[in-house]
Length: 104
Image (cartoon, rainbow, N blue to C red):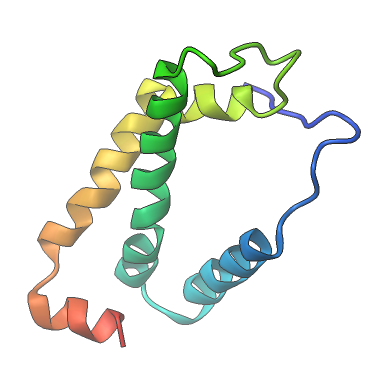
């Protein structure tokens, strides 16, 4: 699925850029499990937001009218759902002491 923003769509917010920079730093300087844990809120949050938007009768569910709807559809996909469940399952693989280390 190709998702492109139309001309005039809002620019990236500072918070989004900061989050992306932080995730890039995690990927470059930490281990695999730390990155998976860092991504967990993204996986869970995007899926939850997409589900809420899809169930909202006021959502504009047409990609020609809502440039972000194709992203919502991607987060609702079976493939993304499986990735989210897999990512969140990472927490069960980590001993509590490792979780504490990651959050320092």
